[in-house]
Image 1: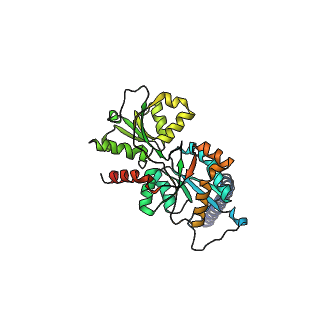
Image 2: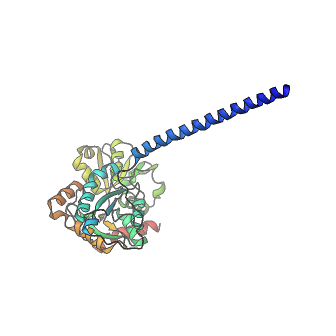
Image 3: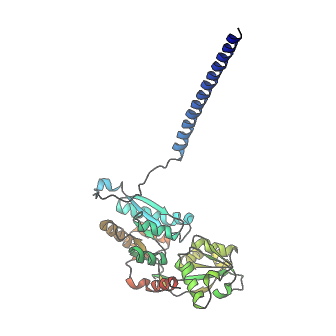
Length: 330
């Protein structure tokens, strides 16, 4: 009798265990089902409207007809000379204009540093790019980055590095900023860092230890804003960006002042990878060179603050090349 009771208890325990196991498996299955439904909803909500394949093309050559050309992208990258939030509004029209002229789909690419945009060009991840002067000199030397056009602004194809300080500050020269807080757009920025750093170096100081704090803002407009708000005591900025900001926002001129100007350098060019398909390079260059001749092109150029695009003079960037050599040889 005792044995039978023991066996009966064991059976009951076994049955209970099976029931609990079944309930556990059922609950797990229900959880997984709910999770899949929820995940599918999230995936649908977060999925992009359109996928663009930015991988490098394979060895096969694709010949596009007028009917298929619209499915091909034209990928335009813009270095953060101006902050991304402002660049989208400024350059989106240009990207759309080029895409319409070439009968392609517009793809607007941004990265957080000048070096990253150079890499997009280097590895064929974009078809066209707006870069900084020093970034161009570096790219030209390292992988043959090619300038196809240069912006002409206010009748000139040159610009300067400006050193700003708050308008109420007693600072009157770049050397007065020793031991102060200083801002640059990027360490690869010619006007934002290379030019003022060379000026400091030529006067016997170490630019890496000249300021109490060197703030990298990520773009020239942010550097201007940092001076205007008093977050830094000075900044080196692109003269084109500063002049444009003063035109559109009088407060910039009221709250900042220029305490130093560099010599002139070639305006940053529009560039391509040297291995870009020749026909596409020719189309892009031609479209940019005639933008100022049609109504829509004029409107887009006016929004950016460019008169027109012109062919680059090979000697235009000689001064920037010399500056780059001096900086890298220090």
